[in-house]
Length: 133
Image (cartoon, rainbow, N blue to C red; front, side, top):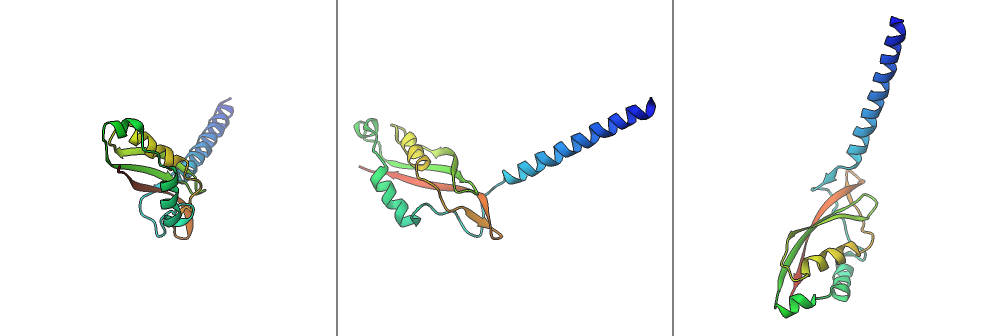
């Protein structure tokens, strides 16, 4: 009877250890790097991204009416697969500009991911977006 309890305890311990290793592996894949050897790049490079912003950034009516101008600072993660995720406004100016900045970044397409030690990794990017009439 005592050995049966020990075997069950050993099986439970093994299961918990396996779960722990799986959790740690998933967490390692979720690491977001701020410094990498090769920074992420948007579709078409910076020149293509500039054109994308010119073509797609819409000045919000509320900002026009209130004469709001300035720079919105956004930060986001370019995942190892090139997708854009976790977009946040670091510094906003209001009038709908913050939401517009988030929208254009979210719709910017697949990026070339950042690389560390030759491997594609999740990378934090900070981007200023200028609103000027």
